[in-house]
Length: 398
Ligand SMILES: *Cc1c(COP(=O)(O)O)cnc(C)c1O
Image 1 (spheres, rainbow, N blue to C red):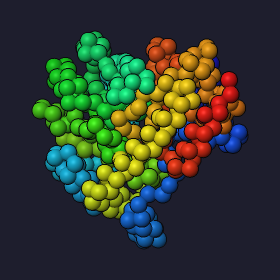
Image 2 (image 1 turned 180 degrees about the horizontal axis):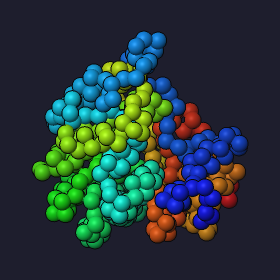
Image 3 (image 1 turned 60 degrees about the vertical axis):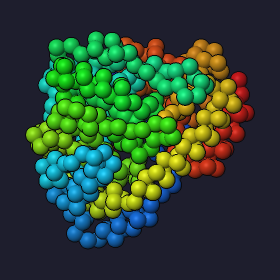
Image 4 (image 1 turned 120 degrees about the vertical axis):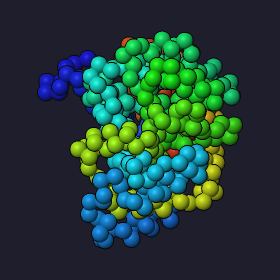
């Protein structure tokens, strides 16, 4: 790892992300970009129209620090509708610049230097960086993939590994379900175990649920906050980006008991203070859409998952079919003799005209060997784009 000359010690190793490298490679080679997870179709008109109408009005100016009252009310109503949890929109809901800011603000607010944060690995790439900014220490619990291609197999973690990761320095448990990059949805038994460990050790819990509505047949999303004893120690993070195809709007939120939300608000107000004025009423409208919208987006994405998973397997890449999210993970060892997913991703544009991301970037350095043979492909793309990607992968050169 080369040292970056001006970068503070706590951020060494978090240099340019591989997403930037792979996206640049996609542009330079005219490849289909299944690397970064963003949709290539617009969100629902009911949402977009509200944003268009709001631009040029008072909504262009700073919204209230905690978010507009209508968006906070819409978040509370949405959480109550889908999770059965009640939050006070004035004291228990905070609007943030995407889920990313909610997570970072929560970690900055709650973690003391040297405190440990327990999480499942692989992990979403902002977690380790945000924990480092807070001066915290990552304690990863490895997820193990099922035999690829065995349909119905899911990633699992070992309860002994979870318990071993919780030391006396542990302060917070950061959970992500549905999980990026694996597509795993924690089931009730796994959540009960996580809750038991958090209660025993007196941990705060931060749960990232941005894929709550992108769950496929056979799986069910349950928020950890709904388990007995958990609401009072848990902060739940959501976002409009993945649900309404508006990842560039960066409208997110965090819900939890008032004292925890107040702590997060203190950090958040000096990060961005506020953001996305005209988009806040639009996301509020989206959160109020009928149930059919939310079940519809999951069914539509499930169909696209099936297209990509079949195509990847056809191309000789053993693939774990995900239970949720935008992403499928493959093992490249059959088509990449050195078994190096990063090398595979760098060569894939030339071999097939497709771009993916090496899953090793979702692992801590000490566990890089676990992620080395794995590569993540996104399927949140139009049918014709996925069909073309699958056709190209089918002709992949050696
Ligand atoms: C996309 C994503 C985020 C970021 O959400 P924003 O609202 O765009 O900040 C957070 N967590 C996970 C797991 C994600 O995949």
